[in-house]
Length: 279
Ligand SMILES: O=C(O)CCC(=O)C(=O)O
Image (cartoon, rainbow, N blue to C red):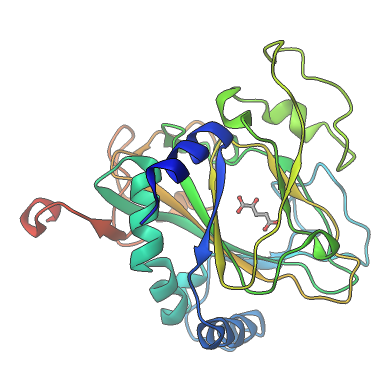
């Protein structure tokens, strides 16, 4: 459970470091399970399992060189019970409910980004919600848990404090070819907005939360260290399916436009509602 001060800090910055929520043993189990999924050893498959440098990545404003790699796996929970258990972690889900001010939390989708030692590529600056053009409103919160210490050297995420309040600047972010500094202030940004990125270093087993409109990204991993992490993007109970463009999860949607996005591929992982109301 987060304190009131932590929730206030999240509201102000658009991101927050939580506690270490996984033991070393739990991290080991997730690492081994991740390796099995990457090696294609699981019977059930995730929605995506590819190198972001190949195929049109959502974050391809920073082109990777041929030798660079970011292994992106979407919905590893569908391939692995251990990752589903992780996505249902009671502490994380309760804290997500607090930050989202909701009584019900569903999985939108999850995402591993693994930056291997030395050859790990960058994830360009972006905002999440503009890249999710089939859901509204823009008030989702993600829980990013490190499976290795994520530090500046191995390509931890960077965040821009307060940027979740500035609206949709994805076009501007996608045009930025350098990881840092930003090349210019976007035209539409309010004049008093201070665009200053800060590193978001997360310890192995620790959780970091970010709002779906917060500007964020992560540079190369040129170190000898692995950089493995599992992000789960959670929907509050009121998130609706409102398609305006395509998305990799579209094939799994079984509700009509304007309806709450629910169903077996968007499971409830937290609720304070009586069971009868969830049927
Ligand atoms: O893992 C990363 O470096 C980026 C992840 C990300 O963009 C996200 O979880 O929204």
